[in-house]
Length: 288
Image (cartoon, rainbow, N blue to C red; front, side, top):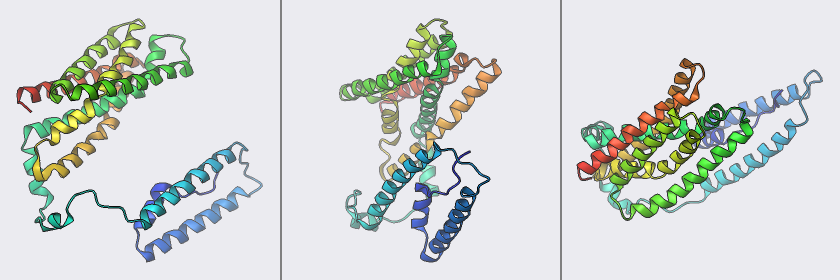
């Protein structure tokens, strides 16, 4: 049974700090009553709280205390602005979101780029989320603990790829870099999906290397040349990370439809990288 005492979470704290005085006082009062009720339940002789749960309570208290201190620092310390000259920004006429969105979505590179980022994030999350199950399927008898090392290897390979991609960005067209790495990821996923040997696992791990430049390169291509709409464009690109919740779901559905075969489910990120590669080479052709 989990511990019943209430703890205030970081998100709750931030919400409370944004409330006006009246609402904040009411919220703290309700939270206080919740704590009292939970404490009464915890002290009841009819409810047994396992001893090991108190270790989690201590850890949560330490983390929570640190976050409270950080929140107070942000509340009471004024940080310098990082947006340049405020006076000039205040002189700019305000505009509703409608015309801005209309201008942005009228640009093919923006529309295609949003979808590309959506699919890339979904592919990345999907690949890493199901790496352990993939290894256990291909290498029969592998324990979950042992398969975890392959996921760790993926993260290390990803870090190496970041270093290489950063070096290449100063020497190659970013769009060409995106297209090439995404195409390589597609080829590796083809091997991962259709190979029945450990070659499939090796190929899947190397996909993480190819993912390294995709997010920043795609982001830069989408918002390039957007002028006064750059901030809005960037915000929309960031929201495309919702793909990380959609593609893994699609992979799970594919796996269930094939009797739990997770290997065939990796056809979803494969198709995602096909589109990302298309977007990269499309930008090259358009001279972006």
